[in-house]
Image 1 (cartoon, rainbow, N blue to C red):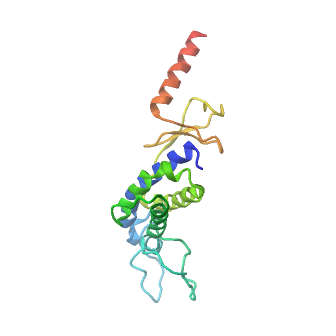
Image 2 (tube, rainbow, N blue to C red):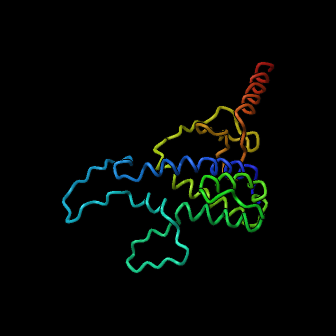
Image 3 (cartoon, helix red, strand yellow):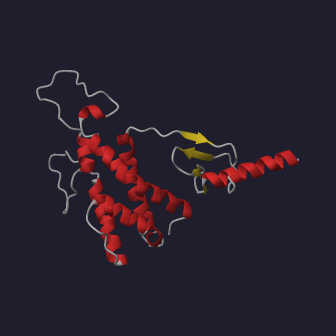
Length: 200
């Protein structure tokens, strides 16, 4: 069973993934990464005209066991494989089918069933695989969200560990704490904190 903080994080990741996958499609060309696409040095063969890591992420998933006699497989499951597998598990166990097989539709379906999925025995594994996929897709967007330390201490662990990443709620960075505050909740706490200081 997932904690409320883990559920909020998983929901955010599921909602972010369609956009991150769109950015991944734009990152296929070699010059689309942070390093230059310029090739130095002489080789006998021309460079690959695409980023293989991105092709591996976006490629179709194998339906059977992958054999690697040449040692050229990276061992990572493509995004479609992870999303489709979890969609299939949700559909089999919950009984509700997604509208179609489009990855965006499947991600919306998974986000819709999140309250139910969070109570399942496999919820931790599900959250870990989606988090891993989100982590693999995020650098391809070439967006660097700012992460700021907030001024107030965490209401649960009392440590100065509240951080806010652009576009997201305020979270406690202390391992195991899991506190998540909406901006309005944080503002209310800040007002109450300032009032208490003024009254003293």
